Image: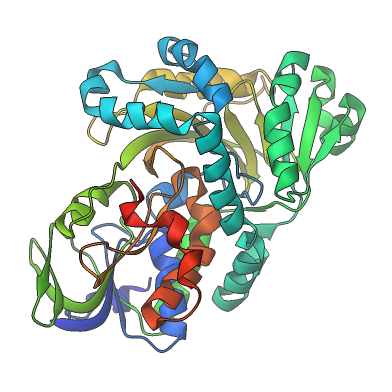
Length: 421
């Protein structure tokens, strides 16, 4: 967002205030402003500077399998007790996380997994068209790469163990292609020596620079009249004129408030009357400068649980799950895990040029919360997208615009209602 858009004094009354200027907030602001709405974005940080910046850069229309599923449930004890597993827990946070973990276990049972996958697949089916539309509107089509995404399986048992996921994606019409080691090598010559089996998602898109994507979204929103206020919202309450938002140096009344504050949304949802079991997955990335791309597309070594994504002038290694809240400092062990893992493929890499920790807003059923508050109709929720914030931002923006305008089928957002818990 341009400096000018942030320098104007904050209005006292506004039609729509969006709390959170991550990718979901930016996409929603752009959509609403395009429909002629008066929109104010509120965030203490630079737009798109959190998980929207630090992700693996994949628009993963194939990712209908929820994080919690029977396979993860069977492996959960081993995963949680192995500090080098792709799914880790900071034990100091166990008491705080226990209610979330109990819900997660329940949502990992077969019937719940099927219901959650069905809900996600409904959103993901529209993810790519929504992204193409938003990219054209925001002038960022040149930052999209249409080379697909590749999962690799270095152990035969891992490919067999993923059969349920392949079957579920096939049931929902996801385009996926099983590859032999020779076919993987033809796509990614640097992986030939590992002779892995592969699973290609040929329709998948990735972005060459997430930060540049966020900057262009912010600029496009500002060009359509969206104003940014750099402030932290700590209070939300019904007011005679709508919804009152307050915080240090902040006092704004909005007719409608969209809560899109990612991992920090739970407190505001609670003030609106919704008890939502949102917690935080701590995600990490490392970046390594490269003179030429080492890969042609994002590649996920399934046994390591991270993505290696070629980006502009660098390779980003991002992923894994660490449960442990917002307050703890970065865990050097998780960064070292990424470093050791990527060097299995590219031992010639130098020192990382950057390292990052960000916070994914995570719900036990892997579904985001999208739609009106169950207790405060002037508040609309748009958070909890987990690993799919980048992927689902444009379609979430469409749904939020429909809710505000009172159009569309209410059943469309019913699986993501705030009162489902």
